[in-house]
Length: 431
Image (cartoon, rainbow, N blue to C red; front, side, top):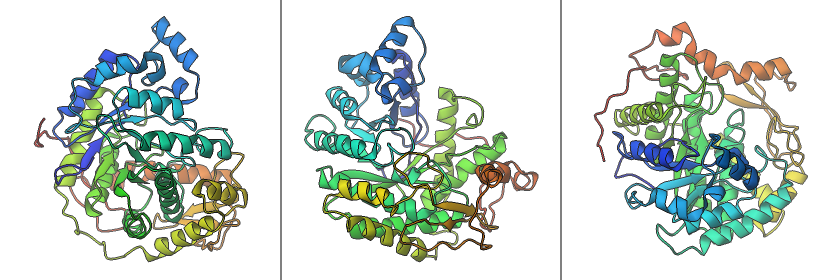
């Protein structure tokens, strides 16, 4: 999916009507940016309720995504027939802990790129037992690995760098990326991408991606991989200027760290599902910002040693549990060796806690039984409900603040580095 020397930008677009879905893909393809297309599934399909999706489709009810199983492979194949996936790949995004039927229909339709993982699409989005998700993902990966049709080999992106979208310190996100990548490899999928969701401190994010790349180079031998950055997935700024500034910071993050792909958010993020036009504007704005960023600019001297060491300790502790990565993941969560902060899934210990320090860095307040140390900035290990709500709104406050908005047109030099909020132009290559 890597572009021709340029950051690839991607939206998360999904419509239930095939004609409207094709219109959205067409607009993304023709945007002034290097793009890939997305078909995002509806919530009924991703939770396995294909009959409800079909019923609502027959009633003419607009769904919050594309009901792949209700439409079927033939309709989907017809939908994507006009797009040359050698230059404009289409990725299916689904959010399912049990994706086997989705993958089977997707491949039959001629789409060979998707995402998720046995942990990253189970703990945040379902109540399925982790062991059941691991078993389902095992055979789902083997299905992808056996694919030899158009657009092959199949590509799989781990969602491990986006657990709950926010408030996970980088070491856990890095570890889950590598572990899900190893799981994919063990089940035959060798064309993969790793993910990292923008958090609350620009420099910490740079360090995290540096560490992720280092560990991927060491641990994922035999895989073809690239790194995808996600624009911040939590409470979004409500001002247009703040929203564009946060998006711009994620584009610079991707460019500075040499990442190949960025998944964007729009100015409508705080209020509603964005329009096709708003998605295209976000794609073009991010691409323009990335073009104006030179890799190596800014403070990228830190090699991410702390995140690298912590993530490595987590990975090693998990892999000691079993020669099967899937079984190792199940045992690790059962023993609390992996623990996602604030995640309420029954198979998660939920003893780990995080805080945001005065510089905006995510720090461990408590690590439960994980083999890493907590270093809370003020020695406090308790996080109240009020503290949690305050942390969830951190980036919204930061980017909507008058002080931040007054910096329009300038780059910051501190830990909150962000770009000016300007209207996107259309100076990029059109296709």
